[in-house]
Image (cartoon, helix red, strand yellow):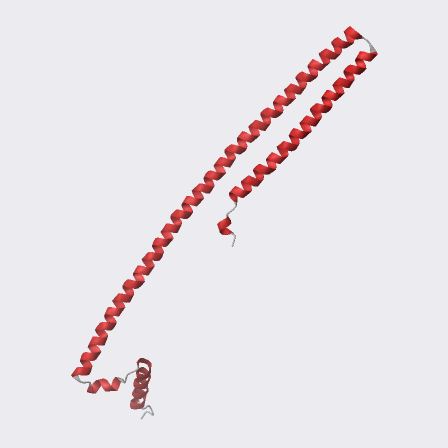
Amino acid sequence: MSDWKWGDSSNRAFQLVGQFFGFSPQNLTTVKDSETTKLLKQADAAEIQVKRTQDAVRAVKKTWRSQLRINASIHGLVRTGLGLITQQRRLEAQTTKESAKTITETRVLSAKTQTAVQKTYLKGGKEIEKTGKDLQRFTGELNDQYNLIDQTANNQSQQRRVGYRDRVQKRLTANSRPWRNY
């Protein structure tokens, strides 16, 4: 014969379920009609509440998914805008480079032309005047002219550098995202 006590085991299980759910399963054996009706109404109300809760949960999930799609659309638009800004900056950079190249080549050509013209004048002056006094005057004028050209070139170079810095700063400012600074 076994030492197992079936009745005690069942009572412990009944007590555990009763404590957990707040009722005594053994009382169901003597339940009355009014109590059964009350339990049925509670069960129907609970079932309705389950459906109500499920619908509410579905609605919240749908709202979240919709919000995510809205945000995806907005972020897609912003990314497109950022890409277009980059394209615009590339076009501006190409134009700036071409402009700098043209200005530089024009200045080089101008300097070569000016040098050729100055050589011609110098040669002609030496052939016509052949005096040291005229040569000194011409050389002084030539030095002043080159100093002025050098000063002008230095000033223009400084202005270009400031312009480059300003464009870089504007580009950085345009690419900043103040809404991300938190």
